[in-house]
Image 1 (cartoon, rainbow, N blue to C red):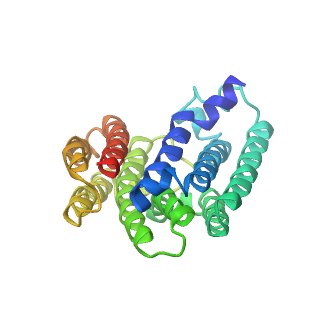
Image 2 (image 1 turned 90 degrees about the horizontal axis):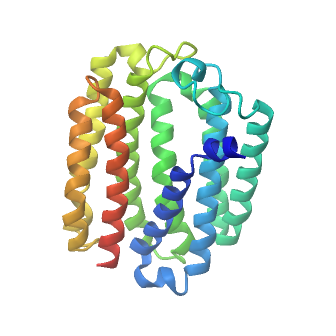
Image 3 (image 1 turned 180 degrees about the vertical axis):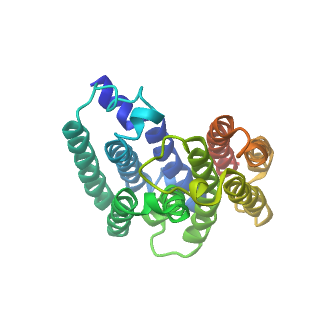
Amino acid sequence: MGGLFQLARPLNCVMSAVGVGIGGMVAVGAEAWAASALRLAFAGIAAASFTAAGNALNDYADRETDRTNHPERPLPSGRVTPRAALAFATAGFAVAALTGLLASWECLVLVGVNAAVMGAYESRLKARGAVGNLAIGYLVGSLFLFAGLAVYAGRGDPLLRTAILAALAGLSTLGREVTKDIEDMAGDVDRRTLPQQIGARRAGLVATSAFTAAVVLSVVPWSLQILGFPYAALVVPADGMFIYAALYSAARPTASQRVAKYGMIVALVAFLAGGVG
């Protein structure tokens, strides 16, 4: 059970659920905890389940390369069998579909679309460099769209708000994914990642561009008064982390991708504070 728990990467699952909650609050304000609360709760469970399933599927697909890159993970270390990992992923996607339907039929559609993107990523896109990184960026950003679809009730403004947050999350994730590929260049023997295609330095420039775009776009929620002053105050340290990640994505990829992950957590806190404020 401990291996399956690690396979799910619970912190990522919690971040997904929290991201959906924050997205719902940014979309419709206090209504997220009143009329829309039940739908938003189902959407959060669906997001967490989908994340756990996606992480398990990723580890299943990467079990051979992880023998070099991450030998401590559950599959290469032998604590979880490939069959158990695949069954765990299947169950997670099923739970995501059911709870997505309970949130809204639009959420169920997005679960289906994202499952197709995830399957394509693991089977083909992962080995094709930048397009695989873009797929992961889309999947992470779609958490906010998922929240919007759960609570928008036919209105356009909530979807616009969550689309901006989706773009922010997608760009920062894109930068981190490219940086992780720079970190794993030696062990990625079964695919042609972007750093392998164009070199670590040029791939670092791509990551830097994505992080920089996220920092620039982070001004939009405040300037359009989508989020309040607490967001503006708290997004500054998050932007600082993204700037660090941008500056050192090629030279220090391990530290850069880790700092970027912490920056994403701080950014979630900024979104939460801005929505409340």
